[in-house]
Image (cartoon, rainbow, N blue to C red; front, side, top):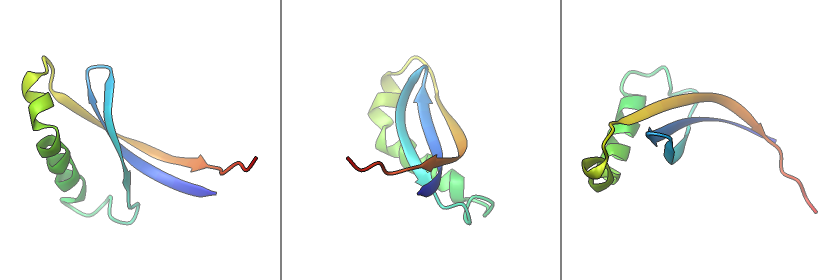
Length: 69
């Protein structure tokens, strides 16, 4: 079992990317801002052609359970 917090980048209703976060670093000034800047740079062309600005959402930890078949 793994608990993960994520930063999600959306343009309109489209999820562009979800980035796992280090829970210990989230309260550190600049941590989220740095990741947001990296995502904006990575998707610069997409953002230039989009009719909307990117939106970011931090989702709380989600429990992921591996299921073996």
